Image (cartoon, rainbow, N blue to C red; front, top):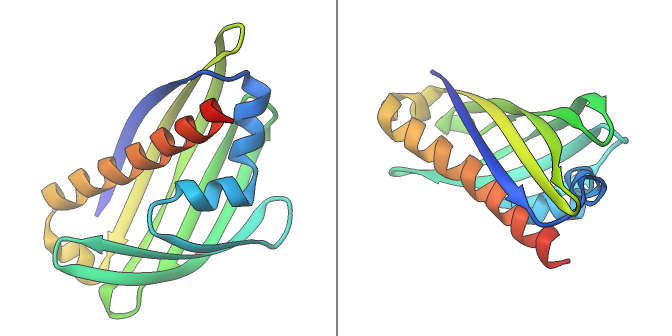
Length: 150
């Protein structure tokens, strides 16, 4: 089951500061909903462990996060793939673009794609779509709060 989510966040911080946050494992870990660990394997590869609850199913996903199409400090693609045992699998990613809206204000636009399989996919597209939108929104709004407050 594939889903596409688009959105944007206005961040009260310069583009360079938002870019740095998007590339910092500690910041990413605090922003990814349910993330228990995120370890840097290289400048573009991270190992992640995430616990998610979707409807009646709660699963722990272990997987990889990869940063690609890097165009510092303006855009990149973040992708992740994880296996949740009997709950199934989840993979997805987001194309992230940073635009200086005015001095010290960045417009962050994202197009996220998610694909789930196994028991989670059986929950139905409406629940998966609303959950995916909620998780993407949580990630980017938490990132906004962290970067704006810093």
